[in-house]
Amino acid sequence: MKDLDAVYRQHAQTVYKFLLSQCRDPQTAEELTQETFYQAVRSIDRFDGSCKVSVWLCQIAKHLWYQHLRKANRETALPEEAELPLMPSAEDEAVSRSGQLDMLRRVHELPEPGREVVYLRAFGGLSFREIGDVLGKTETWARVTFYRGKERLKQGGCDDEK
Image (cartoon, rainbow, N blue to C red; front, side):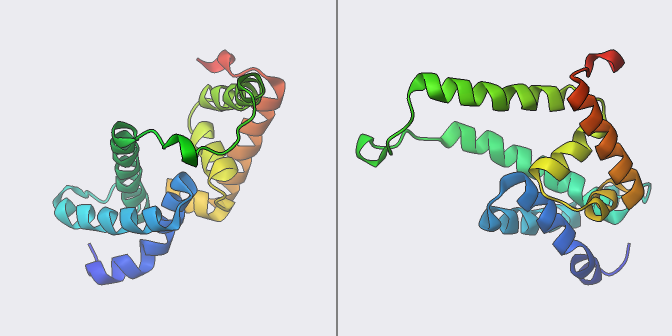
């Protein structure tokens, strides 16, 4: 593999954007980016060159993000009552959340790689070029895959390829 400093300079922005698309918090994305490269250095002997370096790094980043989420779920404390903002009623919240949850369920039912492309585009805000780079494909492939996933969501039928 190339000089690690050059690898960092070449791929740090891609990894950071990928993580930012997942967590939507610049500080967390920066911390996880640093941890990604630390883990990459530790496991450099396992990189076999079968994929692009950016894909390998984003896979490491994805696993670190999932670890972060599991840890955050274990450590979540309830806020003090005085800090609670006025919230909509439970019924209003349930109706709003059910629509969001339904959409997420439908996206989750998409077959791969469409599911990952829709997540990265719709929820992560990555460009098609960035998605292609992260997944080791072309920008055109990312566009077509996103379009097909979007069409499948519009039709409401994702179960036909299970």
